[in-house]
Image (tube, rainbow, N blue to C red; front, side):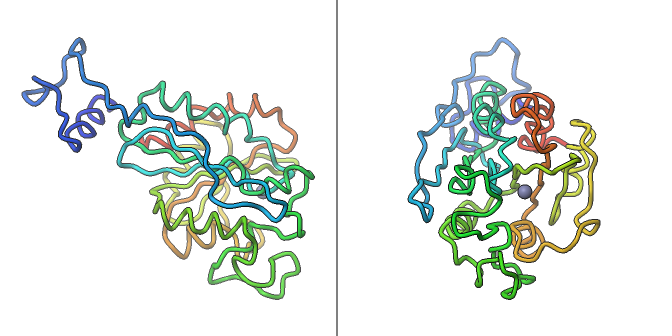
Length: 255
Ligand SMILES: [Zn+2]
């Protein structure tokens, strides 16, 4: 699979290796490495929080498939922080940059993370502040109007700019762990569940989540989104090790 991906990526750039067109790539054939596929950008800010913290993004690889990793959106759910830190390096080591461009949003809610609160510094649950059809203005923690918070607005704009093929978002849950999805992501979530051992739970098994990121991108825009709910308080390194292969499979787009 990876070798085919290499050829496709190189061909799309007009960089097909000598001899590679005639048949399958020979294992020993020297293939010119695609610099974009191995690239890891510096962090850049896509916006700033109420308390002036940067919302940092970096990009790994250069392939045609676009995947967005969100390292957290609830500030008291930081179990994904090691996964977020380690993911780019492993992604590139596996050669996935040939066929995927991975964008990493370090933390959608750094003010909340600094205070260990679910909401941001204004007490708004950013995961209820997106312009989904089910947004509720009357909900106290939803922020009054969609995208009223700089954090949700920056993430909204990032998603519209990237038009990702898949979004993965890190959360945690008190007392249980599972994987959840919105939009056309059932097969991806099921594969993730099989590989990681996290049970797959459907969104309709929970109370409604008006204005959530999943409601907006998954159900309204039709972008596949998979939500990883690690056990609250789980060691972040252990969480990463336990789900690393499932994360990489989802990113690669392997069935
Ligand atoms: Zn959460």
